[in-house]
Length: 87
Image (cartoon, rainbow, N blue to C red; front, side, top):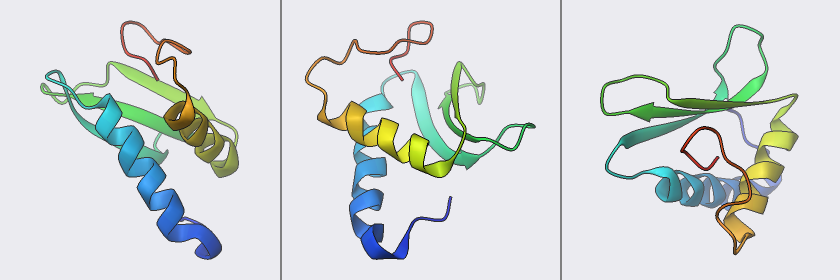
């Protein structure tokens, strides 16, 4: 995903923090960007078996970035759930 030039470092840190929070003994990677057939932006969790246990779709990059920032700042990690993974 192309990040805005004006706050690129800030968004890189936010995305890394989100990926770190999502990584656990079952999740090995988190991918951000246009990854589904509809061409929308998405957050995709990749597990140890290279399967996709959860994927969240957004209409545009700004919605995705807003979601990541909100998740990172939330004190309650149970705000949103997809299956058993909190995205």
